[in-house]
Image 1 (cartoon, rainbow, N blue to C red):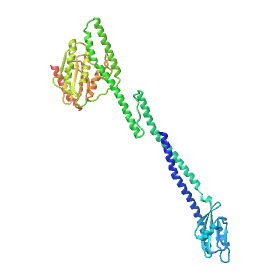
Image 2 (spheres, rainbow, N blue to C red; image 1 turned 135 degrees about the vertical axis):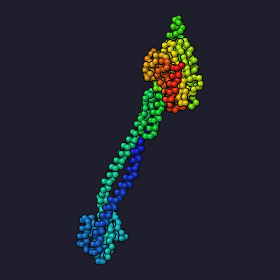
Image 3 (cartoon, rainbow, N blue to C red; image 1 turned 180 degrees about the vertical axis):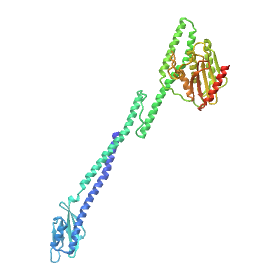
Amino acid sequence: MRWALVKVCLAVTTMVVIAFAVPLGLVIKEMARDRAFSNAEREAAVVVPALSITTDRDQLERVVAAAGSDDGMAVHLPAGEGRAAVDLGRQRAAAADIAAVRRLGRASTAEVPGGSALLQPVALSLGTAVVEVYVPESEVSNGVGTAWAVLAAVGAALVVGSVAVADRLGVRMVQPAKRLVEGAHELGEGQLGARVPEEGPSELRLAAVAFNSMADQVVQLLANERELAADLSHRLRTPLTVLRLNAASLGGSAAAEQTRTAVAQLEREVDTIIRTAREAKPQTAAAGPGAGCDAAEVVRERMAFWSALAEDEGRKVRTAGVDRPVRIPVARADLAAALDALLGNVFRHTPEGTAFAVDVHDSEDAVIVLVSDAGPGISDPEAAMARGRGSGAAGSTGLGLDIVRRLAESTGGDVRIGSSVLGGTEVRIWIQLNGREPVRGGHRGSVRRRRRAARRS
């Protein structure tokens, strides 16, 4: 592409230079010829007044000698009554040419050895005289060679300059295209960080923008796939917790021990899957129009599930705010997974007999779900919210709280960890409704009032 552009520019510039330089050179040559013959006419005009006054040979010779060089001019007088024709100076033109000018009575030029001769007729009383002025070839072509050389140099400079400009334009076009090809090869080889500088002509810039956008989408798709694998794997923790708790109550038989060993191994495998898949950054999106679920119904369903385990471990369970429908813009499965993650943490990280509660607070622009327990609490809430850090205990990946956080942030809300009224940890899920900014002061005031009511009861 680069050399094709150079060749095209070279051909076009060469044709343009030839089209302008050749006619211009011919014009210069013609101007030099006209200048030479104009000078010859001026020299002939000097002799004309003398011929009108006298035809004396001696006087005319002095005039001719003063008007031009010794052999550059000649005067041819016609024959008269009783006298022969007189020729002054060196004659170069043929007699027939001189006779033709005398007969026609108008100036003419004739080719002579070494140049040309201007024949100028002068009407006298005794006939028509002819003044001959010699114009050498060197004077006719004076300056023409220099002009042609200048034109050639200018043309060559234009050609070289156009080729240089075309080469630079070719480089400017080819390099972004080559970088785009290299980036495509790198992305195809699995280098997901490959990007292309968005520079060059507008078309190539648009291609680079499209390529970078495509590469970002590929990276995001892979990240979402890993995220989905991590989330699905984490959802397995809930039935595993049930299996582990049930296996603990089987006694000390060999079959019970094998069951507990298998459950522990399965938990380790799930943890490995989660830790492998958690490298991708989370990507969440708001629920589409018409999507959502009844938060109260989901809470009742999940609490019915966990209540059986709580009864086995002697845990007190309390729910509030689930006696009427509470619509939220979150998929039912996502809310169930978030509740399972939080309640699973309660069973996993608090001693048996520890009470817990789930409260749902509804308002005009937000819904708050509180999961609280009477356990030892979380010493570093920020570390617990950091994806993948967990609590440092065996079997903890830290993904549960991240699932909850992404669910809240997908609606414009957030998650907070603090101290509960039961004395342990409280996880507050703030679910924003209709994408409006929350009036959090009002919600917090409502939450405080309900907490005070709970303490009084």
